[in-house]
Length: 505
Image (cartoon, rainbow, N blue to C red; front, side):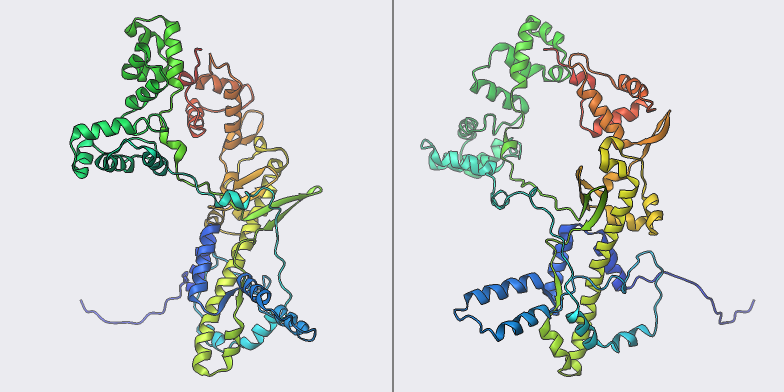
């Protein structure tokens, strides 16, 4: 068998992910906060880019600090220079488009075309172009500046403050107390053994136990406990409710108390049910997580990426550019294009990077608006009447409506939020599976969850509905659903089972 080398020609198509296309895809799936971080990082790395908002603020600050007022003849020139600055938050929408689903092929002529690109003419045209309008939404719903600047007191700070106010701790005992406070979980429980704390503080275990007992008397009641039983017993003792029934219920019958099985508790403690009910009220009024009120987790305020506004009988979708850096090309580097071939080569490379970033940001904003407009067409009744009228919707429906790929729609709707007349929602919220109805169109799963919540909210608390009963009630509304689906939706809504919702007293 002989072997020989032959040449064959084969024509094929393949997707080539250029760095520019990879950047566009990356920016498309970023959340608003992540996008701001990426732009800030690019502003630090690329000297050609500037934030026009920051530049304007600095110019205003410097002009206000100048003691001499500008002459009347100089004012028009300064105004003309300000208007003439190149502000390109986004490139021209009609000329530059990036479709992340389009097959991209390398072109040998593209490098020469970019190298021969007339940057002077491009920048001059951008300088003479009118500034793009910026949408400024109503900020009445946003928190005040004071609300965003305050910092809550942590559990450690609260306990350390009480420790410093106490005068009956020696230096060694204060060292032990600080170790105890420093080893508390966010819920307020001690997450270290006393042997380890005593050894690190250089004291005996008995002395550490005494310090722990005194720390447990601090506010909030029940802090520094090692178990749930100890936490509840401390609180019961501090409020003077540590009688034999309450203590016995805490130490031996927390499981029955959770399931509301009061008969076994009464039989074991040899007490009538009325006394058990009164003791159960006391235990249920205690706080199993005393440290949760002093969590240092700050509230996160959601800034919508797009607004849906109703004007008359029409809805309008507007991208929210407020808060995003307004990118522009630095005038200094624009003038440096004529300072030699090396400077021009360096600046052109940075200009290409800046141009692609601006185009990608623009494409991202346009794509979000297009997807939101498509959602508005499919879910018109939701925006008119509320969540009960949400329809089943999948990514493919929107992708086919706007001529994009499902993966692109998925990236756009992840961690993106829309402000609507019904409230602020993540774009993913509008995509739901369908639940069959015997009288016509399917119902969205979110609408079914809302109906389950309404049914449970109107039930008799002493005789709550079981999951099977909820299935029957939904069947009376022509909604066909399985019991396990009701249980799954109830758990997603964080609603307890009927046995745990039942209230005896």
